[in-house]
Length: 224
Image (tube, rainbow, N blue to C red; front, top):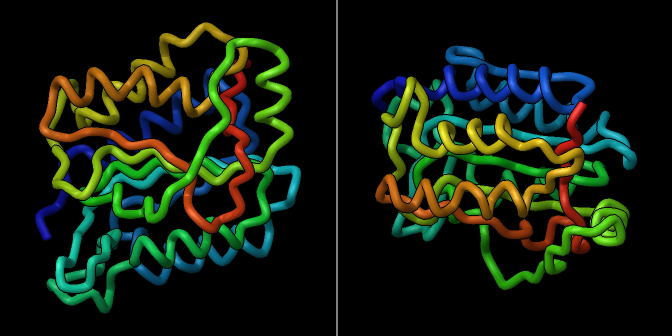
């Protein structure tokens, strides 16, 4: 597997931005050689055991991805996956299982990897956006398990702009330029999907994660 040029820069820049501008209490991270299959699974198991029902959780994955046509399944490819065998991959169905097992009130998974849109299996529905206090109260009260992916079932670009992937560049730009106190995941997606689609060969996706406990709520970025 070819090492990615921008993945670590992307993740570090997003952590710096979220820590500086938005209300986040703590960060856990795995970079480069730390991001083995065992370590990623161990961190997911820690989240299942320790995240409480009143917590809100944001997960960002920037790395290699693979899609096996014969198995009709997409995967994350950890740093220790040296071959084309799926034995050291993490399947999107495993990720979906962990998203359902973590007891947070709101979970937003953002995956900047090839074929990451495969995590969306089955039809789902969402509460229509409305820029009102009533809307934010409603979507905060309802549990959510949603994902934004940098593409569908397609390769996505590592190279991009200013040392970031195309997806991460616009993800950072939108969150940096936001001046609203409350900014939910759906609004974020609406602002990145057009520039990413128009400046790459990929189309970002946003949807609830099927069978993971989503009841129509939204993860909300709260500005400091």
